[in-house]
Amino acid sequence: MSRPLYVAPIGAHHLDVVAELNDREVPRVSHLGPDGLRALLPVCDLGVVATDGAGAVAGFVLAIAPGAPYESVNYRWFDARGDDFLYVDRVVVAATHRRRRVATKLYDAVVARARATARDRVTCEVNIRPTNDASLAMHRDRGFVEVGRQDTTGGTLTVALLSLDVTGPV
Image (cartoon, rainbow, N blue to C red; front, top):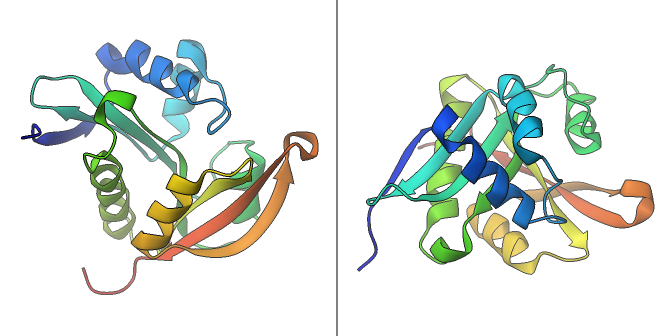
């Protein structure tokens, strides 16, 4: 039986573990390192970890509201459209906790934050070149729809830009 998951704000004591989890997932997410994470967190509207009953970090999510001073080309794609959204910059699940609904728990926190701040949508991108089939399937199952595509990092990476309407019933 798996341990229950708890969601809490990313604290100073989580920084090294979260940075390490993030950097293990490059190129699915961009490299941060501890200093990059410390610089990014103040820009985020939401930064939370999921921990298991033993206190181990099972995963984390960082989400950013419109108008933030953030230069990600994917974030800027959404921000340029003037929509009201909460952008999932990155969600990472530890290899030891995959297939245990960690991503679901983290996305539930994002949707709850979007609704609490009266945002209409949750947005994100997922690699389609190289493909990230597991992430595409999870987002599709959650109700995300593709609203665009773009090449990044000099054309070596293509992403599907996804959106989820969160204005409906809970």
